[in-house]
Length: 561
Image 1 (cartoon, rainbow, N blue to C red):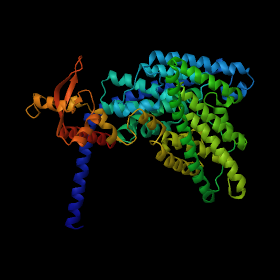
Image 2 (image 1 turned 30 degrees about the vertical axis):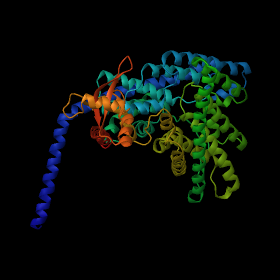
Image 3 (image 1 turned 60 degrees about the vertical axis):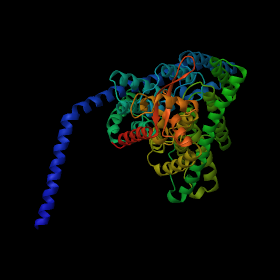
Image 4 (image 1 turned 180 degrees about the vertical axis):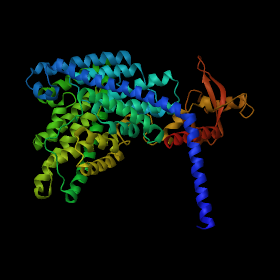
């Protein structure tokens, strides 16, 4: 061994020993607090898991009571035998109750859901609204139990956020810790709802936190497993959907068909999302035009749903019976297409009428129907080189849901865990990738981010777009008495020219002044009771850019830690 080789080995050994000493030092300093945090994550996971389980059982019990059936998995078959006036009246009564709850306990009559949790993770240090969230939880329970055509994941995700917010406030958690706890609660809620530990963890990371930082992974997995254990203690280790006829893929020769199915599912998901937004806009217009009370809007939507359900009871609730029949291939081509259209209309009416619920379960049903219709056509045209048409239903279910959620990874996993069939992953992955690639270009990446964009919350473009809206001019300005700031006389002169910004405004509102007027600073004012503008400081362009850069650096550090 040469002298140079021995020197290299000695240096490598010294570096390894230094790394071990550094790791031991970190463990001594941070280990106990990290373990304590994991126990908090476990506690939040257990709480969120029981909440999700309770929500699911409450829906089953209330829905069975309202529709007088012992098996809600066969709800639409039972509803076909009920008197038509009951099918009509039940969602109207449910809508009235929802309207009263939302208009009493929220300031805008709007149900809180996944989009609000994403906003809380990005903008408010992992916190969500408490009172409005609890009201939305019970409003969604009534909606899903009385004929509303949505899913249960939205309410449980936001209620999980309410639980983590309560804990974060009690322990005075900072932004990073608050977001991690929020991710833990969401992962446990999704896992407990669908018996899907892997997808629950990935959903929290991909959809809510929108990063895969290592520091968040361990506590989120702990919470997700806790939620799954709670589900399995009640229901056992069973999948949500049981496939009687598992599909078989004719491998390479059939892959182009799944690419085409993915594109079609992307368009279908776009129609679903656009239908919901259109219904929301129409609802707002009619409500304003007719001066309709906010508490009455869900009841009007309930009446429309009741009329639709008289002929198509398949739209009632989550729609598991129809989804299972689609996955089993137990529907004709024309009926599958018709049900996909009717379900889209029903979801738009429910959400546009502000009745509560989520979009994931409806997107599974619409996707399965779309995939089945495509599969019946494809296997009919090329029977010799095709697998079963149920395989297309399976892939379509994942493709539409992934495009709506904007979450190809977690949706692929959740579809696998919902069905327990891991042998046809290639078909699902191909369809999911194409649908999300197409749909994300035609909306703001996902249904949830598009919802936020419509509220002028710009999260789709990333931190560089929304961080300016988180920084207040009053926190960045230089006070007028500061030697580095302008004088009060100079501030008054600029105010007279119309150049000023309120102390409560954000940098997002202030930055256009610098681009438009090419000035180094603008006065920051407080509006008095008499309407006069009292200058209290000056916002300098360089200070605003420094604050923005610090916020970007902090965000990047969190996402890569």
